[in-house]
Image (cartoon, rainbow, N blue to C red; front, side, top):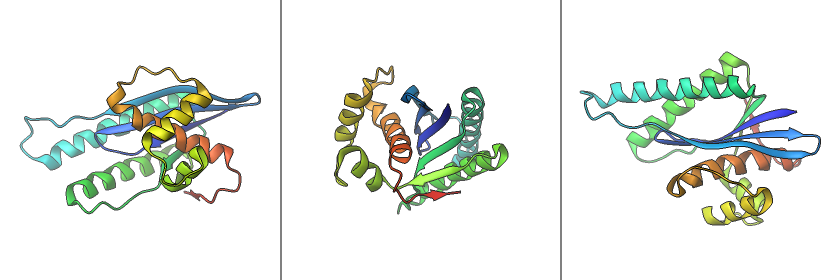
Length: 173
């Protein structure tokens, strides 16, 4: 038994999938989307972003300890052009690296093109293509609202790709 947590990084919507690699195959244990919301009463956006980063930290600490995860798989960091998005991306990664260090958990990062190629056979596959392929493979039932499902499916696709594709070149931190 080996528990891997897949992550679709974000700041407002973070996709998470928990996968157990057993002797009889892969079992999807949980799929969800963790959401942080802006606080309208905050005087400074930067203060609110710190609160949201703390919420992300607490969520992941609880999730990882609950499932006794062995590793984290996350979509490789991208570099957005928008300054606000770039700042939030950096904050998310800072939180994740801190947790990895604190709990001595490896982070495996993978590109979205590698995931699309493995899951759908096409580096240009759409979100819907990935969702369909994963539903066909695992018969997934999720309570995540349809408008947010792409996040947890991306997280699941990350884990499945890393576990199944032995020739894959990934970054491990």
